[in-house]
Length: 121
Image (cartoon, rainbow, N blue to C red):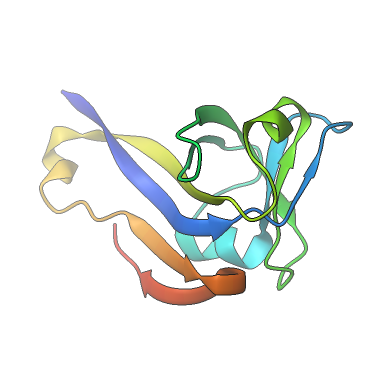
């Protein structure tokens, strides 16, 4: 049996910008992506903690060190600058791997500063 498990999570990321006139995606600081094992163009689920919106899109890399979290295209309607979002990606794993599985997680604080980084499976 295969299971869909959380692979990567960036929690409490603050939206820094939005661009309606851009192809749909979520731009994420490349350092944040690397820290949790997110790849460019990987499908992500985003939950907006301010308005309850949940949406799927794909990740693109913003410049490393920029602390950018930018809603692009239609996703720009689902949040605004200052909103806090949780960004998640999932993996399909064999049941035998699931017992010891640990997602890679990053928790951010004000101005998208790293609060907690917890590496795992």
